[in-house]
Amino acid sequence: MPGTADIASSMSQTQAERMRSVFINVSKIPLLFLFLYMFVCSLDVLSSAFQLAGGKVAGDIFNDNAILSNPVAGLVVGILVTVLVQSSSTSTSIVVSLVSSGLLNVRSAIPILMGSNIGTSVTNTIVALMQAGERDEFERAFAGATVHDCFNWLSVLVLLPLEATTGLLRRLSQAVVDTFHISSGDKAPEMLKVMTEPLTKLIIQLDKSVITGIAMGDEAMSNRSLVRVWCKNHILTSSVNVSVGDSFNCTSVQPCWQSNATTWTTQNMTLLVNIEKCSHLFVDSWLSDLAVGLILLACSLLLLCTCLLLLVKLLNSLLQGQVAKAIQRIINTDFPYPFGWLAGYLAILVGAGMTFVVQSSSVFTSAITPLIGIGVISIERAYPLTLGSNIGTTTTAILAALASPGDKLAAAFQVALCHFFFNILGILLWYPVPTTRLPIRMARTLGQRTAKYRWFAVLYLLLCFLLLPSLVFALSMAGWQIMAGVGVPFAAALLLVSVVNMLQVHRPGCLPVRLQSWDFLPVWMHSLQPLDTLLTKVTLCCAKGASEPDLIQCSMDHDGPQKRSHMALDNLVLCYIDEAPTVVMSQGADEAPTVVMSQGVDRVRSTRL
Image (cartoon, rainbow, N blue to C red; front, side):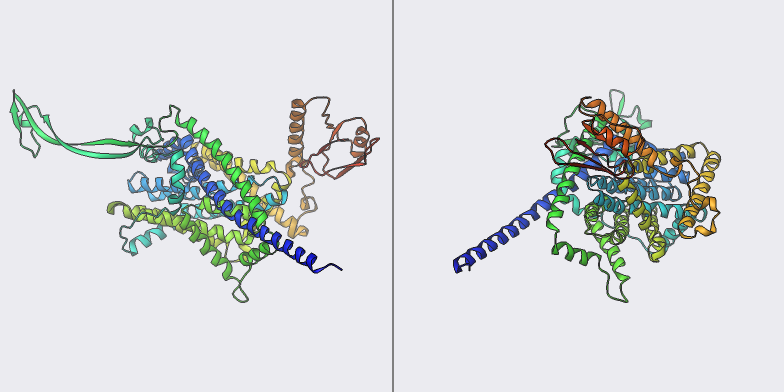
């Protein structure tokens, strides 16, 4: 039997280990906040990089009123501009400025606001790509990120035609403006900027008035750099003597006098004097805005990826065991019956409040994306949080509009209200009734597809946020006849395929035998497998060309695993690209048997036999 001393020693060791574990976990919390702070700062610098690279292009697009008069073109402009500047607040503020200055009417501004709602969701989708290393985490993270996209696209598909035909949002916002006496307010608070600016101001500072000036048609702004050089300036007003030709031209309220047959008077002149230079890295740089933007883009993406990976690892180490279960129960649990439905609406309020505090829907949705990936927040709970974030970001525009001058207040406030009512109506369409929560089901499907074919995530980003909007924009510029001729058949075919897909799943007996599956079509028309096989072949061949030929030999034939198992005896490395799992066993003279498994072309494995 162990003695008393041994028991005491064992207990002290256990207590020491427990204290050491607690100390390590507590020390991880400051690191967690540090990485979160750097993550938010990297998002801020990323936004500045996009504005440097494409801000003037965005301003030129806004300056073309002929384009913006087309609702579909306005929607696409909102998407592309928000993707370029990586900030719906920036694009919305430009729209408010254009409306308040009279250069853009409210009817043309509404589709642009809808497009900015779609464009701002690209940030958290990019963040989800950083979790592609772990298949299950990537599936959850990508589904949690794209639920925002799906909600915005579905809302636009319903509300844009409704707005174009009835003017619902415009009339609703106009009724509110006419009913209430709106007085000028303060500017929206920028609580997040107070924390991030001390660091980001040392890296880059932008003069956003350049983008607004270009959008409002100021030619002088076209040659100005977006990089801010002077951070402090002062307006001096002085009186100077000017000649007015003769006494007949003396219209000044100041007295005139003659000297040497010339009539003089006194006028006030205003001069902007630069006092203090900025202190960021690129203040004296000779690089162009595009070059600075690309440098910052690469650095901010690297910092973003690094911080996100470290955040995920820290969260995984902290949220383990009972802690993770407790947090999951708190976040994902509904209220007791019959008040279970209130939990989702409380999450909407939380999302709106948090977004109002950080003043950025992109920051909030990007911050919860890793939590969705590691399973702390379910997609059912992330959905109302995202909807609340959409509402929270509109309050910033409303407060900013209330700070407009009196003569411009009504139009600016009406535009901000249109953005608010668009999100409210979208929530009424796609949240209260559980069967109408299509964005959740769509996002789950996208997550499953992306987990199987990881390249699909990049294709999705390019297609939804660049290629498709650009194509629609080009068609809209060609005229409504051409756009209708191309768009209506495409929309009809898409609707038909969607209906047939739903019937194949739920009511296959209602369809003819031939339409009960898509097997009668070529494989590439109803499966991503051929494209995946092609991409795998290209990737393997590139790897083969970059490696030594005597070390890597990849077999591309499809004669089955049996033939390939015989080839394993002669090849140093064997590459498997079968869809079904393949097991190959080989045993060297002095080695234990080696088992190689490969499943699907998206899990290509190579091993030395």
